[in-house]
Amino acid sequence: MVGGRTSIHGEEGDCRLSVNLICGRRFLNKKGHRVNVYAHVSILKPDDVKGSKANLEGQAQVLDEKQSSLQMWTKSPRWAENFHLGPITSAKSYLRVACYHRRTMGVLHIESSAEGHDPTQLIGEMILPINTLFVEDDAVSKEGELIGWFSLATPKAEPDELVGSGEVKLGLQLTRSDLLTDRESPVVVEDDEDEDLDDGEEAQMTRRATRREKTVAGIKKTMKAGGVISIGDRGGAHFGDAKDGAESMSSDDEVTAN
Image (tube, rainbow, N blue to C red; front, side, top):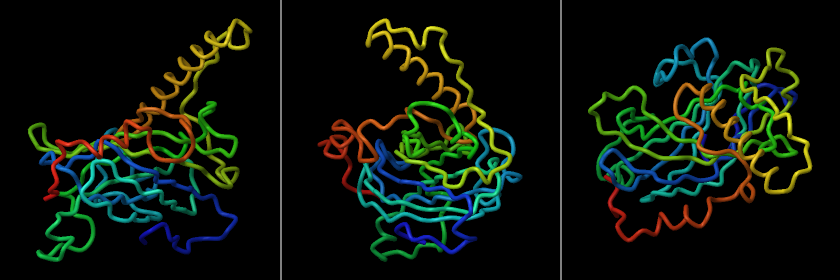
């Protein structure tokens, strides 16, 4: 499905994952050019995710999936699309977000393009355990949404192979997570003994920043592909900061996306 339309799976009372695909930055195809990029968002069966840093293209069983719109000729795509995936019956399932490039000639129908996702045009992917969303951190909003920047990876690529790159900003929120009887957070960050000391705003901010760094490191260890760069609202579920937007206006950007 395209544009955030949900498929009919299960009932309203099921556990589901809301994925807010906000925007991206630093996107390049394997030639170092801007991209024509779309995202494929899916939930993977837990038994099919084995080993660490394993590319799952064509291997894992997909429980539900959605596809975003195509963003043309850009390094900083802006989607602002929301997808609801499920039902999720195990906290040991995985979220996979894979971004693909489409050749401009194919988009314009000047050349034929294959059905489905072309693995040779994979820019990168991130694979995150659903369990990770139970992390306890003030980066999680009161509504239970975890917002963060995630880097994409191509773990199956050969050492000398040219690969794409990019980062995506996501907002992730589970509904009816109480139905997941196997839920547990694999990310445990011990509180500092001096957490509640009233020793000034600056000291408290430093402790929060240290805790946030530990949380990010913990999430990164759980991921099967890609990585987490930062977590936190940073002004809400909107686009990136001014620096992010400025990247798309760089005068030395390649205009072509082959």
